[in-house]
Length: 341
Ligand SMILES: NC(=O)c1ccc[n+]([C@@H]2O[C@H](COP(=O)([O-])OP(=O)(O)OC[C@H]3O[C@@H](n4cnc5c(N)ncnc54)[C@H](O)[C@@H]3O)[C@@H](O)[C@H]2O)c1
Image 1: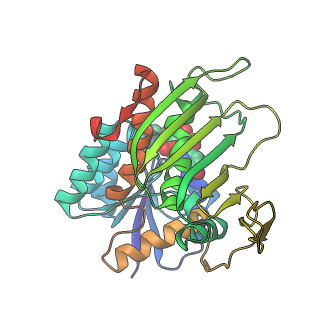
Image 2: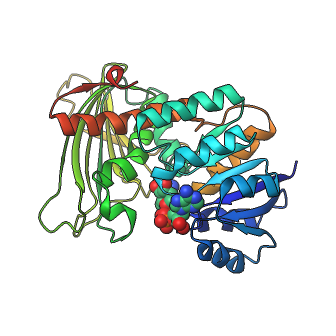
């Protein structure tokens, strides 16, 4: 099956998509759209594309009749791009976050349902062999019942652009990755959150670039998150660094290298349990990683007429964690997911 693709938004992240599409025989890029036409022309030249350039999505859809619209615009534009594309009979593969507000997200999910078209959201940090091995440790019961999962995310990128002006750049633009990873790793969904956002000394962002969150999750589990986008020195991985505590042991993943877990070695007549064995898990994930892995899943889902792993109906649960965290931070109290969903 050959897919006719219309790419909307030709900024930084569009390179991650266009590079992948350039190597696929089953992809035809039929148009590039950007409100800044020069950005679209630059991508056309960079990737040697023979396609038309537009600054209006409706016009572009009418002229090119795509099957799939790729939404690589900024979060505030996602609602209009996705609704327009779905109403025009196209599937949408979009960049995270699903939307900029929960109301918009709910409307987009409903529109996908009503039009019987797919809206899949990229969560590239799920499609990694190490996180799949880490998830398998927990899913297999190797560390017993999971009671506590924690993630540290400390980086200091100087992006400039839309992130520097956002009220909640870390939580709205980045923590969606970590929150979505927490759902994948634990197999749990959120119940409530308490979040404290702040902007520490030395931050170059206008909004709150740091946050601490405590989520109550299903399965009697707690997930905590400490994050900063203005950390100077000793940076963590973009995948966060993780500790999962189970009733029988602890699993660690630094976000970059192979995860492992430790269990107590029980000795005859000795109940002190002070010695531990360290075990590296088996690997089962053999696919491409990151954007390529997620895009493969989305294309196969369209071809097989099924939902991708990151279908908007599931991804909205990760997005709800973001929105509930922002509400909690604004109102200075614990927020239940049912208050926003
Ligand atoms: N998955 C990841 O790891 C990852 C990494 C970076 C960015 N992102 C996401 O990708 C999206 C884009 O981020 P970016 O860094 O490429 O931003 P960017 O500012 O570099 O590019 C956005 C582009 O969209 C265009 N645009 C804005 N509104 C538009 C509209 N209504 N119609 C058409 N074009 C429009 C802008 O002119 C710009 O060229 C964001 O949602 C961001 O969160 C994801």
